[in-house]
Amino acid sequence: MSRPLAGCVLALACVAAPAWSQAPLEADPALPSFAELEAAGAVIGEIRIDNQNVFDERDPRENNALYRLVNWMHVRTRPEVIRRQLLFASGDRVSVRVIDESERLLRGNVYLYDVRIRPVEVHDGIVDVEVRTRDSWSLAPSASLSRAGGTNSGGIGLRDYNVLGSGMRISLASKANVGSTGGVSHTGTDFQQSYPNAFADRVAVGYTRATFAGGSSQGFVLSRPFYALDARWAAGVSLSRDNRPFSIVNSDGSTGQYRRKQEKDEAFGGWSRGLVNGWVQRYSVGLDYERDRYGLDDGVVPAERLPADRKLVAPFVRYEVVEDNFRKVTNVDQIGRPEYFTLGFFSSLQYGRALPALGSSEYASLYSGTLGKGFRLPGDATLLASGSFSGEYANGRGDQQLTGGLLRFYHRQQGGSVLYSALSADHARYVDGTLPLTLGGDTGMRGYPSSYQSGNQRVLFTAEERFYTDWYPFRLFRLGSAIFFDHGRAWSEPLSPPNSRWLSDVGFGLRIQSARSATGTTLHVDFAFPVHRDTGIKSYQFSFMSKTGF
Image (cartoon, rainbow, N blue to C red; front, top):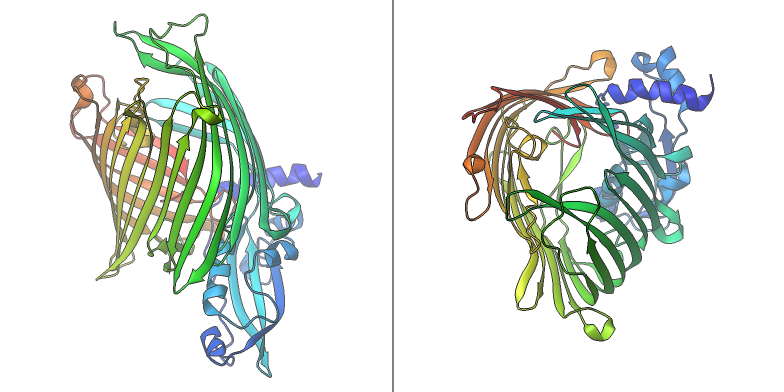
């Protein structure tokens, strides 16, 4: 069997077999810690990269024919790929902050299952450092099947999150919907390529192309981001093209359709003083270009009104602030894998002004922003607050405004379970009359069909009791479960018909996390029961889908 073909076969096992938690790699107790070495003014000497395979063949429980075959099929992450992402180098003074941030950045790569950085030898004020990584299985058939709110959908494809150990990601997928009578309708294809460290100095490149029912999109990105807290400059360009139909309710109650062809480009450059007294401030300037053209398609009910064509060319300024405060946790949104809470304050604000002198069809102000903060509370509890807004202001009115806020609360309880609750609120205003906010199925309210409610306002409250197990079938699976309650509503003013009232549901579900594979997804299997049923709504909704968290 050829290596690629065998890899596809083995990938099925690895994707369907979520991960186990490996025993921590402890530092040698005979050696000082990084904190002690920093206090002593030690200097980093040799940096040893120990890039380990998917399975540890030194562990008898993982030294079997299947696991050895998986290791043989897998191309390990190249040492230089890992080394390029480190924020320290030989000759630098030891800094606990820099080492911790390096580990955090490395853990952000889905193709790495585990990362440990430790001192291995100290001599004459010089410390040799080992960076040990363990790979995830990166080649994965992207077969998916989901049912939520009475809608069946699925797709097949192939993804490689670490092509030949380079850190490059490539994926190709084909998607389809399955009707209640068993008929299959092809809905599109999706190609993605991204290379976070394609060139020297952490320059990233990416390209995407997608086709879907009635439209297509593509995009290209070339950028050198603010990759670390102490990064001093950033620059980049992005290009995107989108062609798709949109639906709108006509005055006679019929659903009309129009087509939008959109071009969006951006170029920017930014600078920063780096990390100063625990805070980072970043300043960027750039140019946004957007052109929207609208028309009608043959063979569909036409929209009785079309948005006006327009073109915006807008110089912009952006200001970002980040507080260096992160907390490493386990068994929160992932099962058995370290993750990080952002407890420090963060914010990004951007303002642009479209000018006819630059070719714009009108004067317009373009604005957006995000902000957030985390709080450690008594009793091993954490509160994460975030908000965002974006919009345009032109012709004396606010157009295409979208505002949202989110509160997430985590309380670890005796026995290791976590009480999770979240409250979100969103408001949208689109001058073309579209209602972009939906509720039901995979957008919240698991006891109701997909997009059961829609409108320009939405509120959703969720409470879950999450349970994490230590059961490792075949040393491959990580399992969890949840009991949940949802309460929410999506609506517009004036109120639209009967299903605009508040909705509630209760339910329970199983969680199976695929941490061994680079997909990192968690399979959700849920039974949800609506508290108040409208006519035509089932007494329960069954759903199974892949998500990125618990």
